[in-house]
Image (tube, rainbow, N blue to C red):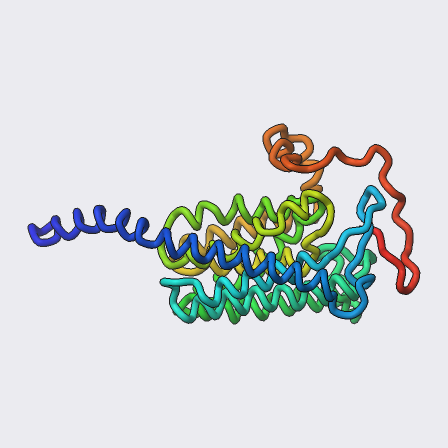
Length: 311
């Protein structure tokens, strides 16, 4: 190391914490913007639901009616906050908005048109191989394309663009896999996103958007008044994926993509709910803020046209 390089190296060590401290107001502002926008959108949507209110209603395991409008509201909060996140490159902000909007759009389509006949990648891709295009298949393709577009905005080299696209689409899918119990998907976003927010840098403010939006309506989710649905889970997951991919080196991208691929493959064979229930720390986090499960779940029944479907 030269004499000139030594002071520069020391300056870098000192400057990094200073830069992180300077970025804290931006992260906080982004999180607050996401929270405020999500709460405002939820109030507006529940006051005047798009179409008939029954379109957005589902019944949970207790037989209680809840709304899916939490999903679009969190997507609005995420997109608004990502669009105005301070200190973030314009291309990254555009990627965050694109991911949130695409996640919400394809997720809403699956929420409205989907059925339980096909589940998981295996089910939807198997149907596609037989010439049957399911709503889940449309979502998989759509999120894949949107993920690649977002990845191309946050990375420069072709291989890194592809890896980043896989991280964005993979995170969108993974968060959606957790949306099976009240608050679980939102908690997954908070747990996965908080370290990225605390680490600092431009991607930290970008991560604060889905984190703030997930926290905004967590009380309603835990209280079983609303649920994220595919729209909210995919939007939050895709935007979080952008923050995880932005600024990452190739090694980091490969590691993230492999972890996401492994978890997605495992979900086809293993029930995440059973794994969480069988692990004391994970179960404690999962049950935090939730009501005790219903003693006798309401039987799932096919919904007639215009009726409220079980969730």
